[in-house]
Length: 239
Image (cartoon, rainbow, N blue to C red):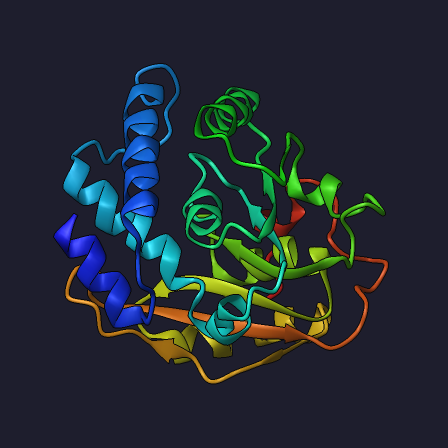
């Protein structure tokens, strides 16, 4: 796992042997689960280590100081799929309290089984659409940190993730390409969902070219109108 170790070090994250062993176990679970459920098109272990695990860990960069201090942040991973980035983040930062939101029930069941196999605590699998889960008082306006990978365009990510965040919480969206242009396009979504935008973070990782993070900070509770009913964020994005 040299590429993963080196990439994590470049992010400011030191991986222990125990964490690497647990990530290796997660990789095996993803490859096995992929035979039954369409979790990922990546099956090569080296690609899983970089394009899934390293990519997942990059979402921690804006919160590294707090994580190093051991804060038990509440993280919601929206559209978790095969557990990325929620599960790698939980393995490396075990104090996290994590919710994995996944509407496809076969994938949600894979997540439950994998959490059990890995022996991870303080993880909840929420088998609901994000538009539904974000209106549940248990989840609405309560999380410190929200992430999403491969969920859709940036306006869609903002509308589906921001309602989970408490005021002061951070949305960290892993993106590639021209992040500044993406932010301009998504400006109406950030405004509607009450998020300030921070300067985008362009990461220099040879294993993940053109990779970066768009970060939004929630400054007020979610307006009652959001998220809109199921399917609307993608059908009519706030852009």
